[in-house]
Length: 224
Image 1 (cartoon, rainbow, N blue to C red):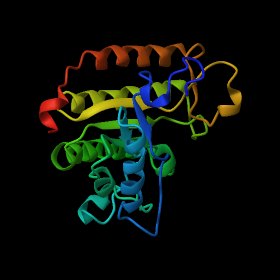
Image 2: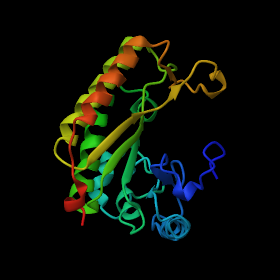
Image 3: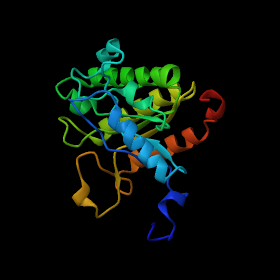
Image 4: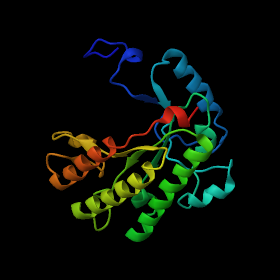
């Protein structure tokens, strides 16, 4: 029950989707059986909302050649297998090349990011036939050589890459991690953005919000 609107969560129009778990990893089982079970359960109690897994996007054994896009390791998930499950409505990826490839240059990290986004966009379009959301990305203040200008440049790069792909199909959103309000210091993890303090970053996000609002996609015909 939403304690503010007094609306049952299954009827709450402010909710877009449920996430099964944040960044699941299981070295023992790439099959997706757990996701199948839990996806069916969530849909049985709430058939009104979309459902996604919350995956980072690491490739597994279903298409071995795709493992080349992983950042040098595998974490016990399979982007393809898990998102093909009937009850999963759209796919997600996260991207933290500054963490995954922390010893590499900015150019290498951006190159990885471009390939990461493109490969998952291709797979969502051709194999999953479901929308794709980049549901977490950012640049940490803990990174060596960090500056707001460097973060803004990286965000512009990601948004530009996203927009180019989104104009041609399944890419449906790109969400920065994470936006905080003033006074939320306990939630700081290095990636925090306080829009009232970071005016240049605020302008980038505002412009991107307007840009994505202009995209007109109809998934009803593409994903039947």
